[in-house]
Amino acid sequence: MKLQDPRPSKWLLFRIWASVGLQSFGGGASTTFLIQRAFIEKHRWLSMEEFMYFWNLCVLTPGINLVALTVLIGKKLGGVWGIVVSLAGLLLPSAAITCLLAATFLQVENIAAVQAVLRGVIPATGGIMLIVGLNFALPLIRRSYKEGVLYLLASGVLMIACALAIILLKLSVIIVILGAILLGALFFSPGRGSPLPEDEEEQGEQQ
Amino acid sequence: MINPLIYFLLFLKASLFSTGGFSNLPSLHQDLLANGWAKESYFGQSIAIGQISPGPNGLWVISLGYFTYGIAGAALALIAITLPALVLVISAGYTRIEQRTWVQGAMHGVSLAVVGLLLSVVWTILHQPGVDWKGLLIAVGAFGLALSRKVNILIILGLAGLAGYLLYR
Image (tube, rainbow over all chains, first blue to last red; front, side, top):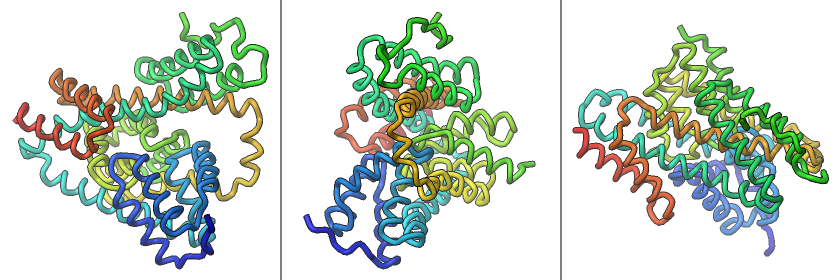
């Protein structure tokens, strides 16, 4: 596949990202698909390999992965201004609609029918959120399983321990994350004889 | 009442210590409630509005910003979710760090923590005011439909809204 000269006009870049943002409903997978279709298949400004490389960097970046992906693609296609118009295109139209919906909601929230509908929608988002968590968890579980049962078990314990630390112990999220980073660096780093040392009680929540 | 700088920094902190669109919720939940700047019900409502509106999932915080601090809150929230990604622009030695073994272990640890955070998000949503056993059934139904991957999220939310209307009206 031959790549086209990746120098689109800023206005075109803005419009493409805006249409990606406005067509994205229900999560990252659909947005990723739209980005691939626009930048790899339709305009050929990006190869699939580049896209995968960008994506791997984004997974390591804090915050919303799609925003990071937008920054990387925007930078490649237009430098600093490419980043600015790409972010503006992805976020501003969608954020404006979100604001409008929020404002509309505040006008109608006291209507009984609206509250009834919301009492159905809110728990449903909880069920959907569980899928989001599952999508995150499955590749981790698969990778852990390859490393052995002990590794898998320790991963499961750390996962649950983090949830309980926030829900029950009300620990600060930052402490939980920093603790998980530390435990991960100590116990989950490859290249040691055994992925886990014998004394697991350092993980605290085992007992 | 609300100190804009601290408000912004709370959103930025939540965004910096998160990955994906939702794992900033537990941090915001803790901090905004502790400061008395948000009501419990804002969180469920914001997530619901975020699901209905277009754009990346992470835009639910725009709605939370709007509910807590109006247009200024929405704008500050938008800046807060954008800034962490700009780290990518200035980080040149990024790929080399990725190779170190302890970084891989740490990444595994932080990914597990994010799943834990998402589980606590589910917990928070299912403990929103007004969610009773019928609501839990709706949650289970939505989970099942979403798991099948055959039904669009908007249709699931529409069905849930209809169920809510019929059950609670």
